[in-house]
Image (cartoon, rainbow, N blue to C red; front, top):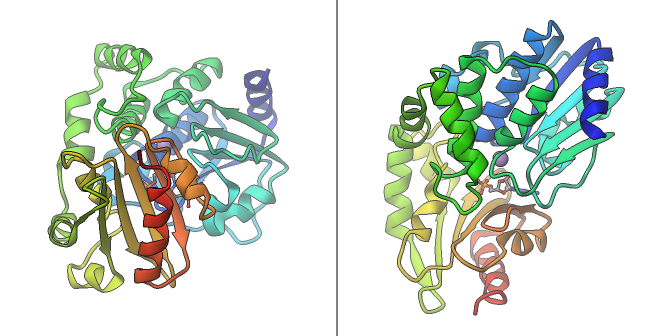
Length: 317
Ligand code: 5GP
Ligand code: MN
């Protein structure tokens, strides 16, 4: 059984590295830090490498120990990828994964490419953090208040505050248990979901101002350029949540955000009831979940917009 293998490989490993997806969100950071703290509790030698991440998550235990850069020639005995559907999503840090002797992939994306020696993937889980509860218990880790806080940060982020359809009975059961061990769920909720950075507020205004309703109001489209981000002095993660605005408008099925990156546009898609946006994004080499997915489009804004809208149109009723 995969969990037995994972337990054995962690036991055998000398140096371990934990990696997660680029543009890390609360689930990526929460799951990585929960695993990091857990492995330290098991007295393992472990590095967590995340090049850039939003300051919002600095309150989580172990955040100050996150490495931005690994040692160039570092070879790890074991690499663990969390919340990443594809080894390419590990960004420039895929090399630490590929150079490791043994690899583990723990994730909840339906589009996961099963890229490791041991893959523990459950697309029914609303967050990678929810899968980790099972994994950590199996490893004999004591889920402390600090580790629980990392896990709930990921669960709250990826369930949109317990409101997305993937939110399960287990989500509430686990949250209730966390409350009983003293985790301040409401404070984490406020920190990860409610508090807006000034940059995010400025980008939200722009995104709303530009938002277009298309196809009889079933598609909401908006975009953000590099210039916008520069103008408002945006920091890492300040674009988080912009794509959700369109989805809240009555009648909208799919919300699209195009965000300019280095020489391409990053598409973020969300749907409400029936469009599988992971399928849409896979047409552009991306993926994700049924109701939340992303992709990279190497075209100028107008062409990227037309292409993605045309693809979404094929899925509308
Ligand atoms: P977001 O729109 O928040 O960046 O991403 C939504 C979901 O889609 C996340 O679960 C994320 O991991 C996934 N995702 C975003 N971009 C890509 C991509 O380029 N490829 C794949 N496979 N998944 C992506
Ligand atoms: Mn996730």
